[in-house]
Image 1: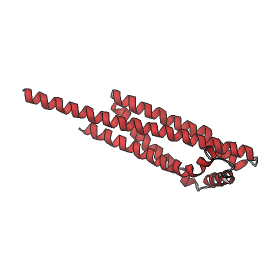
Image 2: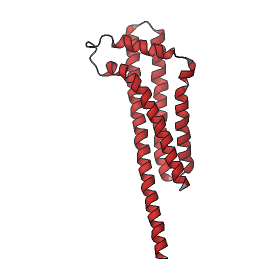
Image 3: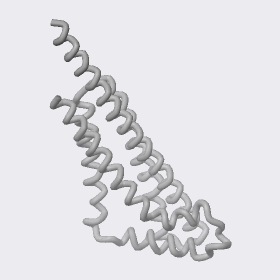
Image 4: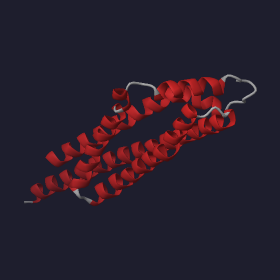
Length: 178
């Protein structure tokens, strides 16, 4: 019973971390949408607005830049708790979720960070536009990875509950047969 409660808390920690990430990328979506899917002729200010937004984001106080690290720490504690339990389902669901998280982090490190540096330092409009589109595409990929983590964790939660219910029924049945 205590192990099941720990696993429930683990899933809650990971889901909270994922939904915080959704909120972070949702605020960027107001600019990313116009770079990826809208007609540039209909929205001529999309590039300049997005460039201003991301430039302002890079100039935020350093303490605000570390807030996502706290979010990652919460997720890491959740994944650690799941992997420490060492059941087959934990290794499968938490391991796959961890791979998706590392994929999202690497996408951020290789696409978003360099793109932000180009936006701040470059004066070439085509280079800035290309970097903005790369950032928008990376955000979309990261959101898909987070969605995969959420799907895996919810599926894991329901598998845990069904397994616990079946084990409880077996215990009850064996007590009746005595």
